[in-house]
View 1 (spheres, one colour):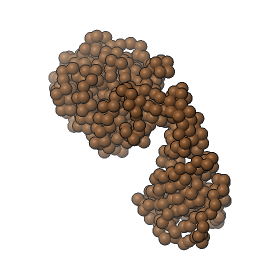
View 2: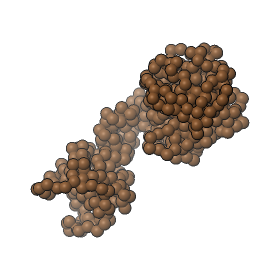
View 3: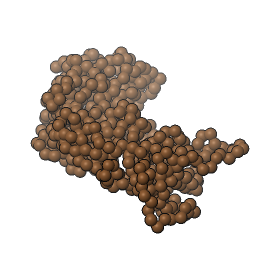
View 4: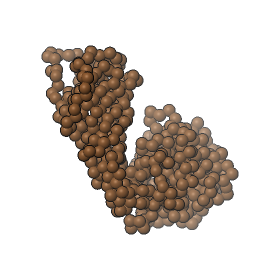
Length: 553
């Protein structure tokens, strides 16, 4: 943060910590150790009189350094009001910064700023969590970003709860005390321990298991520093998160359906690519055998909300066949472009298939072959098909931990047409798309689950109808042909004949490469994966999914 004038003499002896007072050091900035008081103090400087011109243009290095130093220094001194005033949301900042000292019970807090990266300033934090005679160290890294205030261009810290701690969202709090929820000991299907150290992807899953089963599994609570979720995080189905455990509670035991061999393999596969996620299911039962994400802070595989691209054509194809609008070997138009609802839809590289069948269009993932049918459909047809046949988009899955259950909203005009190819308002995640492949393989929807419903007597979601035998056989033929000769053939090579697959690519605004999707089944296994900003699904998510299916059922 550069050289700064010392604002107080460095003390030879560290000050005592009393009640909610916190000692803080901004490392490398030439500051000493100071007492932070609960409520903070009023800002030392008033605003200058007179009119100021609005500052514009990119922030300079000096502005970034000055704004970030002003915020961290005030926070360091316990001047919460002044620190909050150095942000663009003083009220929200003040509330959370005050709670940082009071609710989290932190002392001896030390900030160490790192060199700025443009307007972003990373910093590390070291502290001690102290509560009723118990104490443990806390270390983490965070960052702040400097922006210009719209009214006058003044450089201020862009306030986000993640500045205080990277796991915080709006409305979340840091709290140290006796946990209301006992810990759980999670077991795999073979009785082995499941830990985040062993399976890094399962940290969020373990949080969800604790929240759901901690009390009923028979454990007792311990003392810990944790993130207590607010309304926003709860709406996103995020669970409370333990940061530091001061005293261990007695865990209850929860058995899951996870396979240790599949989970280990899934972890290895997603680690090969940035932002990759995958889920493996057993179609005959709905049991979840593996879930993995290359990023461990958010469970995209279960809770992601992403456009699924052409993997959605599995559901759309079942709808078109059900309605008699096409069949596997029926000639079906695949022109370079189709216009509907004022939008012009293209195929990848504007390819076309002249005189081809619907099977050829599905296998090559021809967008226009599906868009051309939009005029023959009602606005709610795709929504009903997703809900009634595939059990999606009803927000009623109960797998044992929080999930996003897919969304296929009723849309009209161009947006409805875009939904047919997995764009528009359609949103899915690998769990949803693995379930789609599972439904095709088994012939009926089985709600996926991570914890057997017999554990807590919960009711699993069901679909109100099944595909006709004629539709199901044709849909399987489409996916089998795609796995053998279409866009999924390279990834699925050698896995036949009892298999099927569909690739997908979903364009995302502001992203150079599309999200790559792949959903497939083989025997009594179904899996789906996504690689965000990875490119075509057959090249990115395909090898991940196929490698897991090769393990056999």
